[in-house]
View 1 (spheres, rainbow, N blue to C red):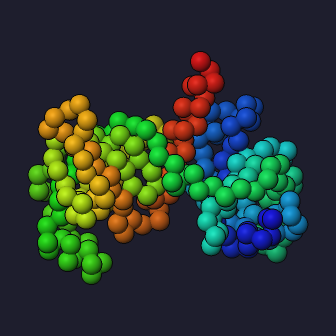
View 2: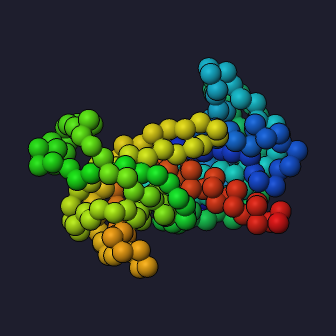
Length: 241
């Protein structure tokens, strides 16, 4: 199955497996970017040794990692162990072996994480919509915004509540912060409203569903990674309790 979906050149993310308790907390938070160099068999593959601040990262042999392959058919996930490190044809290589089956990881994009995130938003003006259609960055960032709260979020969109109505099919500018690894990053996104309805039990408040428009891949993957990390934290808290 590995060779069916994964090809040389595919981008790869590598991070410490949750059950690898012998890796320190700082290491668990790191996500290493790499690239598939070769698929040797249905359970072995080579990746470029990752780098951090222009230095090679020598991931330890016999350590298990979560691996995410970004392929033309979507994102695939598995657990894999580093079995060797070497240099060949001027490339520093990690030889990895699957320790779980390969599975499509759609959940990272479509799983909706329940949350309570402050968000500011407003309707786009006509000239902003025209600029968007021409793929020109033209946003009036000084215009007043309306406060809302995101109650669930995914890599494709969000559900939010507030005291304002944004009609279906309308485009909105929205701004919110996500916290990853102790660092906060602001996101400015355009979304299309899909559904709006009065919030049950709260007169004057409304629930909206919206999906992102023209979101770039890097931002979507960051949101997905945030959701994935929060889900892992939630599972850990449930397990500990």
